[in-house]
Image 1 (cartoon, rainbow, N blue to C red):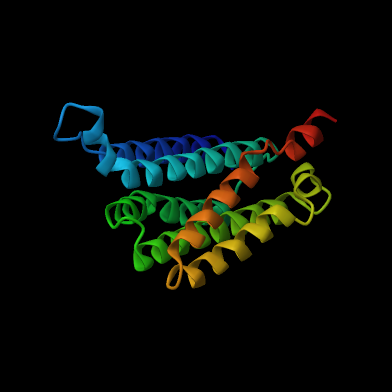
Image 2: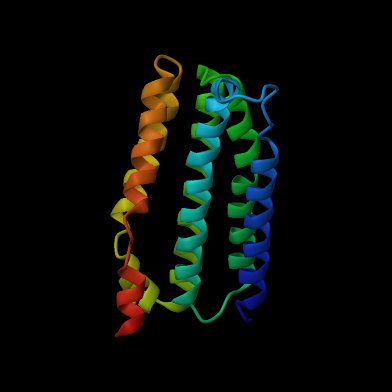
Length: 191
């Protein structure tokens, strides 16, 4: 079956997730710059989550550009990914409102971990559907960056209970690692 509806639905869901996240940002009660100071944890968690959602959207788009068809398993794997991404507003808001308390930070890490794992499952099903010699399989290779990300999320969840700021630094590190443009798929498609 065609991949067009999967792409369109995913784009819409991710746009709604971002909209829900921004609606959690409330205006300050004062009118001066000092009234913004108490909002910095919420804004910081929003900015990181927005960047992660942008990264997922970009990589999802590139991955689907390297595919031709989808099947029922791929549709369900994509829904699995969207489920975990849809929890970003909750985890983001709780992390920011709690001023990065251990349990909310660990919860944020679990959402990141499961979203990353869901993305990995989707990519593997797409590779299986299109073959080990497909452009997607060649582009992703052993997906070292993806596997490192999952390991770092797991570490961040464990560390959150003792040092939530270290977990937050790990999240930002993973984000930075993915913000560096990944041209693997573009290179394979250009061949």
